[in-house]
Each structure stands twice: as C-alpha cells, then as structure tokens.
Image: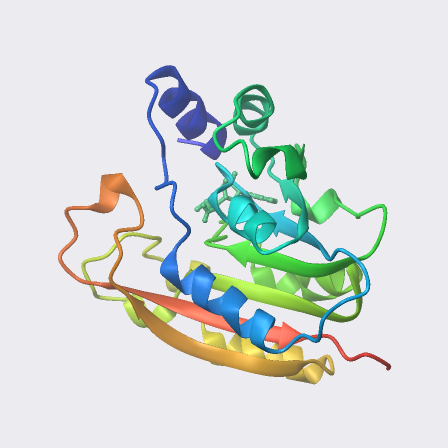
Length: 217
Ligand SMILES: C[S@@+](CC[C@H](N)C(=O)[O-])C[C@H]1O[C@@H](n2cnc3c(N)ncnc32)[C@H](O)[C@@H]1O
C-alpha cells in the first residue's frame, strides 16, 4: 500500500496512522539543536521532510520555527490544509505536496528534519548534498529513523537492511561534507510509535543524527 493510500484509508475511517505526540527521539534531537544555538535575530525556518500527519511539524512550531511541511501524499496534504488539529500550531505550518528530491525552498532554511524516512526508491545518503543546498550557513540537519540495529528484533519499521539507517555511516558522510556532527547514535525508544505496531514486543532503536552546517566554507 502506498503512503497516499494509507493516509486516505485512515482519513476515511477517522483514524490516524501515527500518534499525535512527537516521537521521544525527535524531541530529544531537537533539544540537542536548541542546546547548541545562540538566540537568533530572526524567526528560524524549518522544513519537515516527509511530514506525514504533521506531528513533528507541530513540535517545530512549538519551538518557534516557521515550518514548511513537505509531504508527497496529496491526501495527507489536502487533509492537513482542510482540518485544523491544533489551533496554536497549525496556522504556522505551510503544507507543500512534493517529493523531497524535486523540492527547493524559496529561501534557505535553518533546519531540515527527516523523521522515519525509509523509502525503497532512494537512500537518504544520496540526498545529503541536496539537503545541504537548502540550508543557511550554520543550519542543522536532524535525522531520526529506524536504526539498522533493529535487525532481528520484533519491532515496527522496514526489515530490509538497506532501508534502515546506520548513525555512524550517516555521521561519517556528514563529517566528510564539513559538518559538525553533534550526535550520531542509536537510541532506544520505549514509546509506541504507531498504533498498528503496538503488538511488537521489543523496544524500537532509532538512529539519531544531529549535524550543523559550517558557518563558513
Ligand atoms: C514513516 S512516514 C513518517 C512521517 C513523519 N515524518 C512522522 O514521523 O510522523 C514517511 C513519510 O515520508 C513520506 N515520503 C515518502 N517518499 C517521500 C519523498 N520522496 N519525499 C518526501 N517525503 C516522502 C511519506 O509519504 C510518509 O508520509
């Protein structure tokens, strides 16, 4: 089933694919960014890549970001545009229906968040230069996804090793691009990610990578 079909089905039955709460590992990764930035003279902008139902876009708004929620599922974007879930955050989110590979922000942004992006068609490693081109100097790339360390465990997420993330591999690629890698590690997540995965018996292991683009190259 495609993501668009999954969201369409959930919308039709009045259900959600994801919890409304942000994943604890995303909260912790964004805390790491917050602990490493000086007060800014402008409102920071973020892109939530593969925003889904927007739970992490809302978390970014709560943290003071102007947010572009990038999501190729037209069903998800149309639903988000027509249904306010949270009055305090949803007006601050601009939804764009697009594939990240074709997207270019009109103005450079301060942060790009990729949470649980495990596509079959491409590896996130092939997108690093593209993501870098979106960022202001000193901007942040934040990756949180199912770790390759989950292989063999009874957890949700993809089972193919090439779709899972290795924080060390991702961190090394970013270091080679001149980024300062603040975190590149596996984190055990006890919160239940998706209602549909509540029956899994092991805790998920997330790859968390938080890296800052150099201020000058
Ligand atoms: C596992 S979901 C995660 C959703 C959200 N990040 C979250 O954690 O709640 C992966 C999302 O990536 C989106 N996606 C798939 N291919 C994409 C692409 N090429 N560019 C941007 N997003 C994509 C899917 O439609 C889906 O919403």
